[in-house]
Image (cartoon, rainbow, N blue to C red; front, side):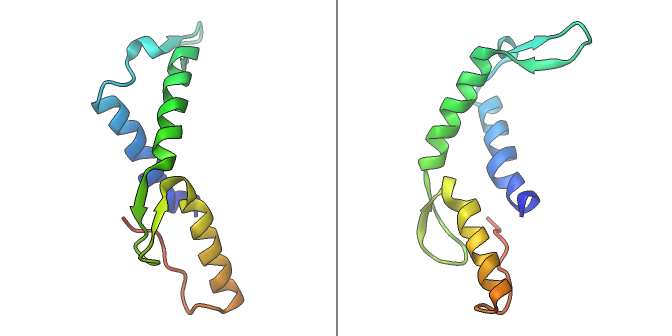
Length: 96
């Protein structure tokens, strides 16, 4: 289920922040071993934007109800458990 949601929740979020120049080179630091890590300022920017993103609503493609983006993993887990219990015939993957 994680991989199913990665593109919509993570990839789209990160690419949007880059395209909008909400995160820049100055939000990263290069370590002695050449590892590139977010600095505290960058981490704060990402967390602030993620909190805002979680509250945005979408129309769930299977339920046909508006839900906050932050509840997508919960809703998908509920649908998976309904399928495992036999309440629904097939698990409806999240496709947006």
